[in-house]
Image (cartoon, rainbow, N blue to C red; front, side, top):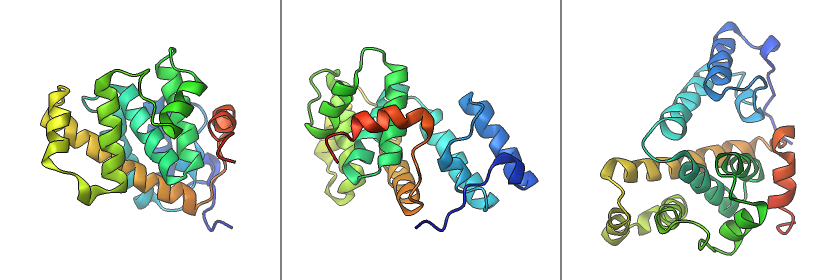
Length: 194
């Protein structure tokens, strides 16, 4: 059982409400996701983690769909149902050519043929950074450069791996329920994982 409490907007301190407002404005949502509300008891933690999300996932040079696919695949590999569902949902919203079946193939079968080679390499190196960071080599960096990634973009890929691990840990430790918005994606992505 989780010791995290979901703090709704009207229960939050003024400092937390200010962060909640920034989340809503930045994401363009009216309902706060559970991953934000589970940190609502601790304004400092929430502010630090939200700023990290803004500067790693929301801003930056990488195309948003690559970011979402990197986080999605890392989350599946690490077993975070909450994060994988949320980022599968986002990837499907960003690229209407992707299907649930495509995401399942990308995550479970390592089938990247439906994606550009550049995406494939970014996802693989992001996963490696998250799961085996000490195994990253100069060859990995060169492979990313060969696909046209700059040093700044490579740093973003590795920062996304870090962000994924952090939020996988928080959402799994909190045993967060998947938001209603992501529940259809949750069922589709995890149907075979049981």
